[in-house]
Length: 309
Ligand code: SF4
Ligand code: SF4
Image (cartoon, rainbow, N blue to C red; front, side):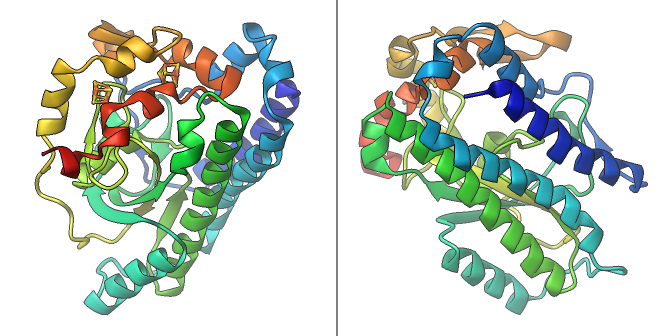
């Protein structure tokens, strides 16, 4: 697979749309200096510099989904100009109910609501709205069980593509109802989705840095909608604090990780930020063969949390 081609497409199709949106936008919420790195191009760099063999081993069947997912990201920026003038800022109970029903009809498995704070915006990025709708989609259990496998990689890329489509459709639905929003597809997100999902009380983050939910354990992808709606029923607390406590005694994902990307003691990144996951190391596994071993091996994959309490 020609990663230079992918990077070119990404810069041409997505980042131009992002720059256009920034040029025409007055008020934004900006990332803080201590915000996490924006990993998209880090991953491309690692792919090109270190994983020569990966270019041969990666499944060509994943490529159409990657390209379509990239187009979904571009659409999310280009559609910003369709936000209504004098948009409504308060959602009615009927519209909220319709939104949830519509999301369900698109195969969104879970939905939650929370607030965005600037430290969750990825480095050098900016966003328009701090009211968040979080969307969860389950990943295929049988294909995760095959990991690492080309079929797993294809399924993951397909899920990214599907979630981009779902997020853009939900954004369109909200605009039609008179609200402003920005779809945040699963691939190429501009903020820390697992933290937003945890704040929305959809689950809790495990040692491997992924969201663990009662229904699917670690086996889902996340997308969001940033919106101007100020009265979403946001979660006030998290019911799954016992999951990180459980993780302190369980080292399964850490031991199973082939690139040793999951640390017991957090490492310090730029501006003093602490993290248990080394993105550069993980990228060598994920980009090389779709890895996902930490999802497959997670104790909560075979026994989702509700069954273990
Ligand atoms: S995806 Fe693979 S390389 Fe990355 S953290 Fe999980 S097990 Fe490690
Ligand atoms: S494998 Fe164990 S430590 Fe790792 S995330 Fe799952 S439950 Fe937590």
